[in-house]
Amino acid sequence: MANEKKVPFLVIGGGIGGLATALGVAETGREVHLIEKAKEFGEVGAGLQLGPNALAVLDRLGVLESVYANAVIPKRLVLMDAMNGQELTALDLGEEFRNRYKYPYIVLHRSDLHQSLLDACRANPLITLYTNKEVNVVENEGDQARVTCADGSVFIANAVVGADGVRSKTRQLVSNDQPVSSHYVAYRGTIPMAEVKAHLDFDDVIMWIGPNLHLVQYPVRRGELFNQVAVFKSARSLAGEEEWGTPEELDEAFSKCCETVKHAASYMNRDFNWPMYDRDPIANWTSGRVTLLGDAGHAMLQYLAQGGVQALEDVACLTNMLHTHGLDIEIAFQEYQEERIPRSASVQTNARQWGEIIHADDPISILLRNTLFAQHDANDFRYVDWLYGRRYTMIQNQS
Ligand SMILES: Cc1cc2nc3c(=O)[nH]c(=O)nc-3n(C[C@H](O)[C@H](O)[C@H](O)COP(=O)(O)OP(=O)(O)OC[C@H]3O[C@@H](n4cnc5c(N)ncnc54)[C@H](O)[C@@H]3O)c2cc1C
Image (cartoon, rainbow, N blue to C red; front, side):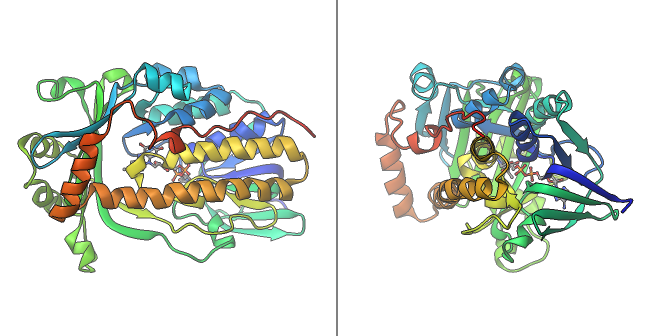
């Protein structure tokens, strides 16, 4: 048919996960096509934190140098009390951290990471990119998959990876579950550094925590911009109201905080907000020639700063499986999910639990938490080894 296109490998979604997947698939020598629903490639939102487990993957994909060019390497991850302004605990990101995990912890503007991946895809002759292609239906058809777009075009592919985000259409092939509301909402944005210099500290990633709210601050784009994310639980959402997470609720939530936090929250752009949804882990991502990656498979709350990082870990694992199993896509997809589902599910559930801890609102929990935090040594990495220490050793073509 005239509007049907046969391709060997198709990626749905041109976010961080999808673009990185295209690079991983191309590394195995395959031709890969990527379709994105937006008119142009791009990222909305502001900053992104990337742990060393993400940088190992970016290194493998050949984009690490360009990512470093726009990033900032912070000195510490710091937890502050949003109510009284006291430091609660910190994790040192200096030499010991770097020696332990082989890569640093970085912060950057998410559009800078996206641009690095996009440039690498555009420079790769095995990768073809399309915009303005919104996928409506994904289905298996014998030993191929059929992907139908809203404009009537159809892709017939030997293999499909759905990297189409938290509201993934691809996921409908394997599950009828829905995104889960956390009742929290985020306001986020960047401000030129010159506008804030007088008030704040720029060497650290700072998370101010308080009952049912938090505020994150760090520099991005070589230190030229200051990124802030203000997050709170919406009473209107809990009450079942349709309109929730409003600027009035933002002001009300942060009005109880210490002056520094109140002042910082007053900078937030009120034009947009992001209601926070995640997904429950599911036991299967794969149907025949189709599998899931990134938020499509394991959307998580952002509290451990791992959603994008886990998408990159997915890419490293999937690429290894494609190297190992060659043309046997179904086995490659099965082994990929066997490895990735338990790992990403544990990050998803831990992110929810960490949210409960940082947002604790009863005095006993807060006292116990703060007492434990105070005993933590900044160079004690035992509690983060499971996150940052995970590596996918690079496997090259074995088929
Ligand atoms: C406030 C906040 C802070 C965060 N901070 C961090 C952090 O510090 N570190 C971190 O690692 N992660 C963080 N995350 C999570 C991270 O942003 C996501 O996990 C990551 O962007 C997921 O990438 P993805 O490519 O899987 O999905 P997405 O970024 O959602 O990309 C999906 C792409 O698919 C396209 N698409 C969707 N549907 C279709 C369709 N039907 N047809 C074609 N294309 C389609 C979309 O347009 C989009 O381009 C944060 C998230 C939030 C909300």
